[in-house]
Length: 326
Ligand SMILES: C[S@@+](CC[C@H](N)C(=O)[O-])C[C@H]1O[C@@H](n2cnc3c(N)ncnc32)[C@H](O)[C@@H]1O
Image 1 (cartoon, rainbow, N blue to C red):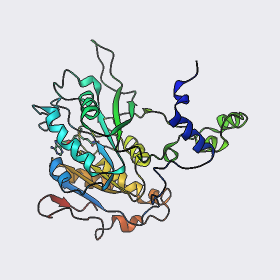
Image 2 (image 1 turned 120 degrees about the horizontal axis):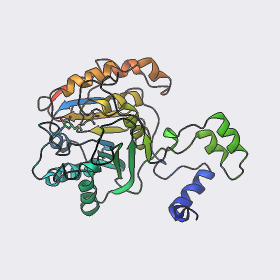
Image 3 (image 1 turned 135 degrees about the horizontal axis):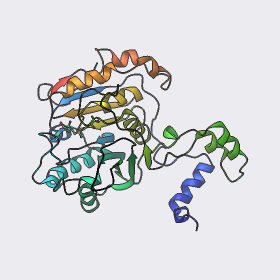
Image 4 (image 1 turned 180 degrees about the vertical axis):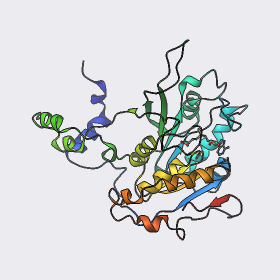
């Protein structure tokens, strides 16, 4: 039986555009060149406080990895979880630009343990109380994790990608997986396949295979729920463009700040925990400035990381404990 999704008019139009090497309307008219310098804010702040200071439609991507009431720490407990989450979800929608996206991390397996909060309840809330569109439910699959006896050991988490409008920005080419030479050779003989796509590589699909960070991973800066750089990088590369602004108001280990600097995006990140600024400094110290010069020609890393440039202030400088990222 053929794949029904191929009969969908949206897919047909996209496939036709791909064949003709045209870009989706979300990319047209956007300035997607790499900037010479980017600005980064790292603040110790409550998420609502930070969001309230951001202008309408000013943000391209929100990386959102919220606490889920699973009592991992002091910050992980809310009596009415959805009432709390609905405040920042509404604000997130307001600050996203019409091409904007939000990627919300979570695990469906926390239902029950969590009481009122998990990704299912967020998706349900969004469906009924928001105009944003669920573009993909990404399965982040990993080989390493806890063992279990009373159920199958869990080996995935989910990332719900919501787009603000149908004009959302999505750069598939930035995250395609290259084919090996043997596969390319085979596919080139298949006249049904688009030669350009064969060269570019395959769509990585909505099932992502990246290991979770082990305790001794060199990426770690000490935060208990730090996400791998590769996962954040794929989100940033596909759902935002160079020079656009990425926000993470549950910044945790500061990994979004690191990836934003590496990828030539501006960033505004905060966390309620005072350790955040220290984590961000550790993340910045891990950036290999030489490696940046290759993927981002024209992006002046030295200036970007120099102490005299990187911060632009939000509101009153004294309100949040701001700290220069570099
Ligand atoms: C799941 S962790 C985020 C981890 C992060 N994505 C990473 O990869 O490092 C959630 C974070 O939200 C922060 N947090 C909890 N309540 C908050 C609030 N009201 N405002 C801002 N941050 C908050 C916690 O301190 C914690 O670091």
